[in-house]
Amino acid sequence: MKHHWDVRLEAKALDRPTDAHRVGNAELTVASVGDTTITREVMDPGWTWSTDVKPIVGTDLCRALHQLFIVSGRLHVVMEDGAELEVRTGDAAVIPPGHDAWVVGDEPCEIVDFCRTYTQLIEAGEAYHAMTAPRASGERRSRSEAAQRLRAEARAGRLDPGAVALVLGAVGHRPRRQSGPAGLTPRETEVLVLIATGASAKQVAYVLGIAPKTASTHIERIYMKCAVSSRSEATRFAIAHGLVNPVTPTGR
Image (cartoon, rainbow, N blue to C red; front, top):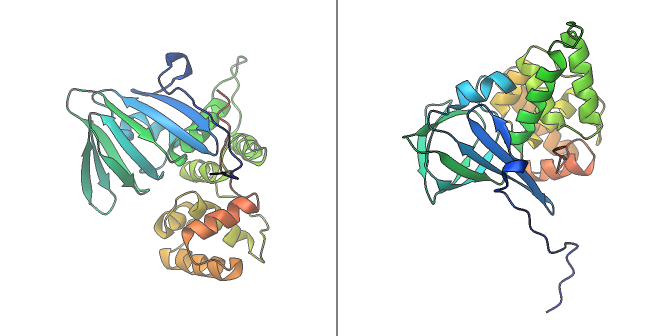
């Protein structure tokens, strides 16, 4: 049987210590294989999102979408609406944005995440902290200068625009307005970028400082203008028009 897919045979190792990146009490390894980016995370006993990741990204809860396979250990997840779930060895799980999580027990928890948004948020958060850290001269960049540089990194494709918007929003920077395709207003373009990177209507409202009902209205208008009927179609539209990067180089 002949196949006409534009892909090549490829494999990447996720267990090489030299490829690992330490984030709090967890070790992350990121590999891009074809059009897919996979993250392996090994969280030590006692790891919690609120103590190990929140200080980096700044958001009140984890605003990333996860599509996980639990290689070993246990992880407890609590959503902002109070829903709870505990996943363990051998489980597959989808965890929507807006949650806290922590390792259960005395064993590390190892996961493989097939969704890129988590590491995109961490990359944006780490970049912002590096830009606001004291320089060798003892001087610090201003918050506005750091925000400008972070947005420039997003425009250059080195950081994800949606992740940058969430990180800057968490520290008090309002997203910049920009013109969008299909007749989208600047605010609608901002909303499209956020929903294409996993944000719900409630999370869009939080980042942009608007009412949830207003965010929902924006989403309805975006669907109409872009001639789409689902979040996945809106995401493909955003990718096609260069508003969201489907795969962002890690630089590591």
